[in-house]
Length: 407
Image (cartoon, rainbow, N blue to C red; front, side, top):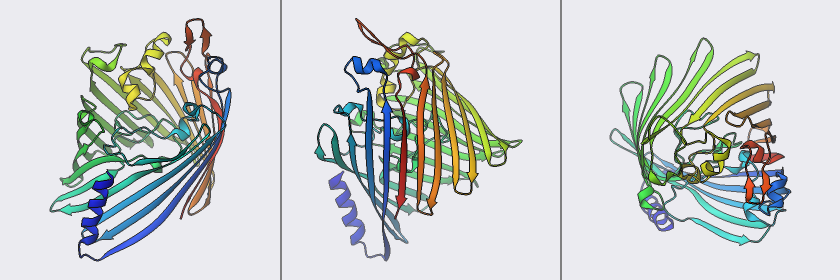
């Protein structure tokens, strides 16, 4: 990717075309304290608790002209943790970001790495956009999202956020070619080719978007990570109730692991449906449900679900088959809001709660105070090893603060 990026920039900057250049900086600091279930500490897998400080800086360059647009972002990250075990640093979904396997070219560098400290850099954006006749083309490392962007994703298979992630502006880039064309008066057709490190895992996905009877509808079909899939997403309003949903069918592979159930031996279905309504002035509440055939139907199968291919690849974030999600969003002033999201595992009845208080401190900055805590049976250490007795009961609890600023 470094060589490709250098070649791309040399070609573009050598073209005699008037252009405007902008340089910006964005920073984000996260402080959090996590308390892990005691069974992990007794098993020697995780510490009892952990304090972590994460700092992220992005150097952003935009170059615009009448013929093209370039965006380059270099991400500089440093992380300190009181834990000496580096695999214990991830401190909850809200600050863990997302995993993307669609970076075909290695562009990250580790500058320092110790038991408690590490710093690194990553070229997170390197894209050029231009028009060719009726086609709009984007080429390079860029963010790619599918679906309705609600709490629990089904269609966003390339680089999905974990449910409840706090800062969706920092989505990892995907090495992709995107070709778009208008269809009719309100529709759009798009072809996305995303390259993976292993070429066999690369993706080719077609997307069609349009508006029908007040609903925004998105249809997908294609192939990613050596499996075919089709999906549809929708969102609109009826009688002042916001209705949204996503549904997809995925081809099963022999490497997926245990077959936990579903309507077919060859296909697996996933779907989510949600409703959101204003229940008072500046206060909205919502409820949604999620089902996934790849998920475990029994508590004893959770460990095998975690080891399954969809979960390890990162486009499946929850291990059970069925969930209920409840959300509340209330503005408590012109510059402040309080959100509470709760996920209920309908297989083992464990819950994960994620309250967030967000305050806008200026036009370019904001601060969030957040927490996450759970209910459910904690893991137990048996002579045969660690036993998971519920999904969210095995999660850490914690509190934290996030501050972001754009220069």
